[in-house]
Length: 405
Image 1 (cartoon, rainbow, N blue to C red):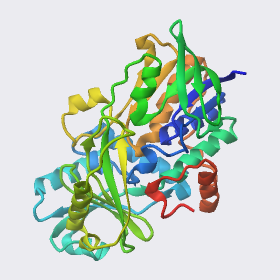
Image 2 (image 1 turned 180 degrees about the vertical axis):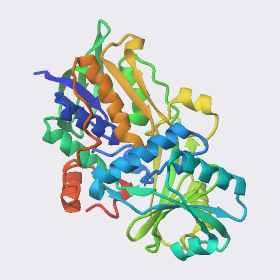
Image 3 (image 1 turned 30 degrees about the vertical axis):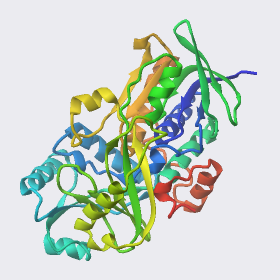
Image 4 (image 1 turned 120 degrees about the horizontal axis):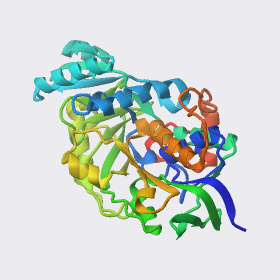
């Protein structure tokens, strides 16, 4: 017998779980399906950085403003899903001092708190920092544990009536008369789901899902490597203060640090080659900031695939501009009850979800405001309970597997 729901969200990463939670809190009957466990895509294979916005401040003011706003919200609502470490942007002797000044000034103008440190003060903050770090400035970066974040969002959605289905791959999308009439779902669901509105939140796989509905969503995914090594003496996130490049972020966990990352185009987000040079380059570049990681034992290595939207990538023609998100209403393509949410960053997942939920509610005639910025995530102060939810949803990703559980 066909399953009926007001809204169907396809994709169980941070954005998809965030959309399901937002809609459920507004009283919408919503179901979420994910082909694997939750967090199995990009969200769970990231470096887990909660941006302050400083990385984008001088290049994309709007993107930086979005990041600092969401940074503050998540620190309020996400509890054990966030580790509030702070962050440093460090200038090495070879780095352009004008870039440092421009970034710091942009942060101050936007309202991102900054505190400038000379090299000695920076090494007091991080004793193993490289001797040729000339200066740094401190910003409110933090660390996200994405497995926890997604599980907590999914649990809150379920607590408010949503149906959450991991291991439920979409096998076909039925379109008739300019509307999606049903989505054939296999695995744990093994049924047709009829929905009044369908949200494509599949990230790097958005093009594949859209094609099932004869829609064109052109993605241009890139892979990036993360290397986790043993090192327990880093307090803040480290960022190299230069134009974004390979190996310019070090993210602290409890007994490890995550080094990253690279950016290499891929054709298929499921099947792609990986190269040892990516690992070596990330370690080498990160060690320029924090020398002990050069010889630290490697614990694990993983690659993630970024959900980049091709028209935006064509316009940017480079890596230095913030990757914003795009909400594509497919009514413009002849399918009235479907939208795709693509691009964006883990930091802005809640904002992406809110924009998507606004669009869904407008289409369904639901008059209800977003509540996700004020309502704390369930079990936010109880990491053991959140980790039980991660296990329940089969939501463990490599980013935080040294911490979760």
